[in-house]
Structures are given as structure tokens and as C-alpha cells.
Amino acid sequence: MKKIQILGPGCPKCKKLTEESEKAAKELGLEYEIEKVSDVKEIMKFGVFSTPALVVDGKVKAVGKILDARQIKDILEKER
Image (cartoon, rainbow, N blue to C red):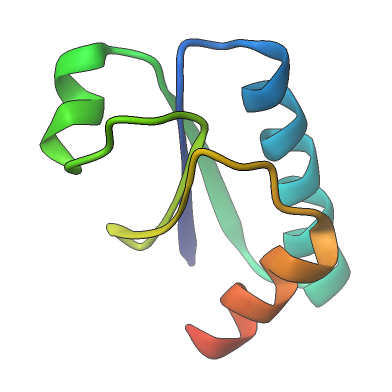
């Protein structure tokens, strides 16, 4: 099962990244869990200073931008 984490305070950009991540995982037919991380101390543990950020299985994959479902699918496929 893939663990997808969205790091950010819950802003519209964070919500959009969450939606696109869910769409990508569903389109690939993956078993996944999405966790929203909004605690600043937890976000800092990833070394992230700009949100939103995308983390897959504990690895930071994107920082400070909203990826679309196609871009996220590319990341998820490389992580298989």
C-alpha cells in the first residue's frame, strides 16, 4: 500500500494537491492511504519549508507546487 502525505496548512493549494493525488492513485488502481499533515513541526521534520508538498512512502517528491494527476501518476509509477 502506498502512503501519500500532503504537507501543508490546509489551504486551497493543499486541497487541490490532495484531490489530484487521489485521482492519480485511483487511475493507477493502487491501494493507497492519504494523510494530510498540517502540524508545522511535523512538516519541518521532512525538511520542507514551502507548501504544499507531496511525500510518497516517506520521500519528499514535490515542494511548493501543485502537481496535476498525470505528474503524480509518473511519480507513483516510478515508486512501484
